[in-house]
Length: 175
Image (cartoon, rainbow, N blue to C red; front, side):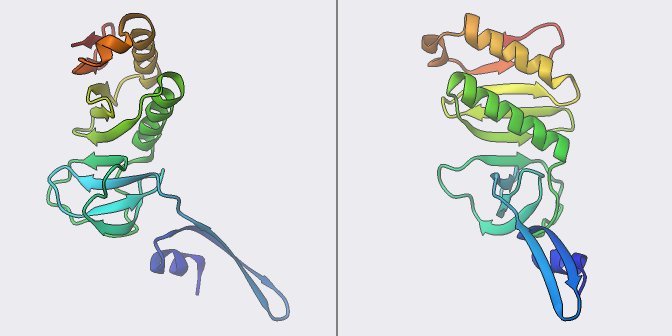
């Protein structure tokens, strides 16, 4: 049995290293996947535990309450355990924004939705959204978001905030 056979048979395993120590020892080093979010299609259906690389590894049926959810539009595509459903670069963006908001403003992200190859919407636990352009410089968009939240959008304004739109290069809008 090869390392790839083990990975194919057990999708909960992120990596495995097989080594032989002669004469009669085989050593398996196994790293399990860590859950980062729950993945659900935008059109409903089954949900899965997903790691930080965008790979689903455990079927859940429906999403549990109070968990971070990542959604992506998938045209009638069947999803199977062990499949990469969200590209790593998009997962990195989601993780970076989630960490930034939590560390700098104590804002939790409830859901991230990849709606097109260019658009990422994130919904906060405070019930307002942030719109990102995946195809544009994400660090610039995060910097604009940080400036708005630090200098213009107070805690009182956040209570009635509907969205922050960062998709345009030279401007940021909020309502």
